[in-house]
Image (cartoon, rainbow, N blue to C red; front, side, top):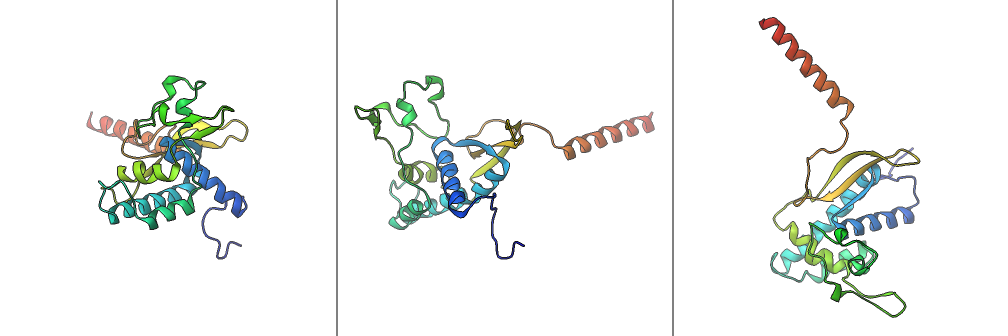
Length: 205
């Protein structure tokens, strides 16, 4: 029985599930969109929405969307929920093609802002929490909620055949609201509409 069990468990332990949600949220904040399975996208969506709402409120309390600094309480909340780490290191990676070093959601850091030590380890790069507070939250300063959307890609994962979807931030997305394959209900509704049109045409003839 599932008495007093809240949320999606995803057949994972609590620590594993928390780490997975943090990693998915970090990837979404860094890239603007991620590809994952439908259950995981539905599980991480409210987690991301609450973080963005808290960051927005922190910016508003500190002086509005034009302010570059959020309140200390908002920063501590985001740091508690996310594991702070360096991001956008791939901008300075010579192995990443230049065509993939673009992002339509955020202005990426310059290669001069990212540095490695003599052993190839990342030494300097933008931080995730600061990125959420300074880049992500201002995008939704005038939006009361619904910061993300799930787009069905119509693809299946090799191996277990799980449905793959795209979880992305709204506002600068491209493409239709519904992507990929068509559901069975949609196909059935289209057939009924076409049949009704044929019946009306025959009756009027």
